[in-house]
Amino acid sequence: MSTAPAAASSGKHSAPPTKTIYLVSYPKIIFMYPTLLMAFFAGLWLTFRPNDAEAKHFLSTAFLFVFAINLTIFSFDFPRTTSLTVFFFLAAAVMGVLLLFKWNDQILPALSNLLKAFQPEANATFYMTITGILSLIYVFVLINVQFDYWEVTPNELLHHHGLLSNLERFSAPNLKIDKEINDVFEYMLLRSGRLILHPSNEPRAIVLENVLCINAREAQITGMLGALQVKVVASNARTTAEG
Image (cartoon, rainbow, N blue to C red; front, side, top):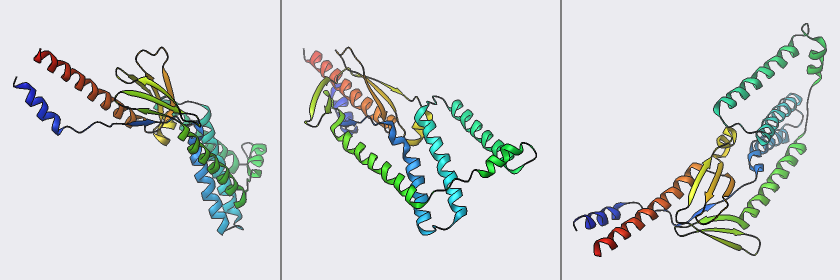
C-alpha cells in the first residue's frame, strides 16, 4: 500500500516522453552536399576573380577531388573505421605518387609529361550551373519527403504517403527496432543510418534507409516505448492490488 504513492510521486518528476516522432527515409543524393558546397565556393570565387588562371586550375582540381570522394561514398559502403582508414591511406598514397611523378621527370618522363599537361579549368558559370542543378534536386527531395514519411506515436506506427495522403496503420506497442550504421562516411556526413522496424503482428519488417540523426531517433523511440511499457506494467500491478 505504501509503494503506490511513492511510484506516483516519482513519476511527477520524470521528463514526459516524446508524443510524436517523425521518421524520413532520404535518397542517397543528400550525401552529395560537399560537391554542392565546393561548386558554390568555386563559382563565387571565380565570379569576383574570373581572370585568375592559377585559381581556376586549383579550384578545378579541388572540385574534381571532392566530386571523386563523393562518388566513392555514393557507390561503396565503408562499414568500419578500419576501412575508412585504409581508404584515406590509399588516397594519400596515390596522390603522393602522382605528385612525385609530376615533379620528377627522370622517373617516368611520359607519365610526368601527361600529369603536367593535366590542367583542368572551369569558369564561374560551370560551377554555378552545378550548384543550381544540385540545389534544385534538393528542393524536390524536400518536397517529396513531405508526402512520404513515418509517424511514431505511443499507440500506432503511421505511414503517410502519396499526394492524397494515404495512410497505413501499424500497432506501436511491442514494436521492435534495429539500428544499422553500414557506412562510416555517411554517418560522418549526416549522422545517418538504417532503421528497421518490426511491428507486432506484421510479417514483414519496415526498412528505412538514410534516416538522419539515427542515434537520436533511436533514443527517442526507445524512450517512448519504454515509458509505454512502464505505464502498462504499473497499471497491471495496480489492478492486481485492487483485486
